[in-house]
Length: 156
Image (cartoon, rainbow, N blue to C red; front, side, top):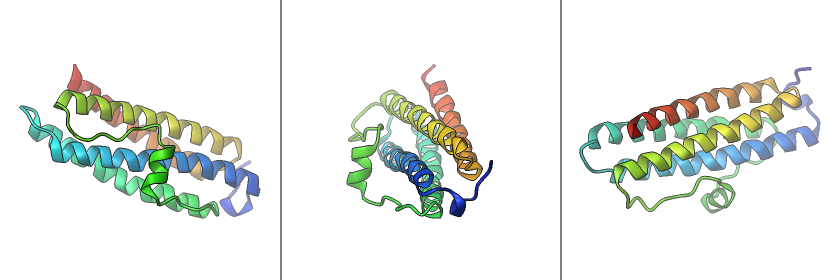
């Protein structure tokens, strides 16, 4: 049965908020990863990678807001401390000292991690009848899988 956020049990809200917070944390770290690589990429593929990395971090910046707002709709607290996000994230930050292929590979792995995290969050939301969160997670997961595919294509 589909339930609006305000009608879900507190335990359901809490579980979904926890899953979304994981996604928010990884999205924030991946946003900075893409921006860092955007600033520091060099080499023959500079132009297309510079543009792709910008497309990714701009997409992810908007996604952070969407995830945080859904957390608030579920009566949760939207995590806003970068240190806490880094501690939670399965995506590692990078110092930006790398060749283009290493950057692409790191960002591809981050996209795959995000897609998996959001798939899990979507499945949890579905278990609790939260179709709105499930839809958000599906949409974001699809975006991350698309970015992962585009990045993989650069490495072939």
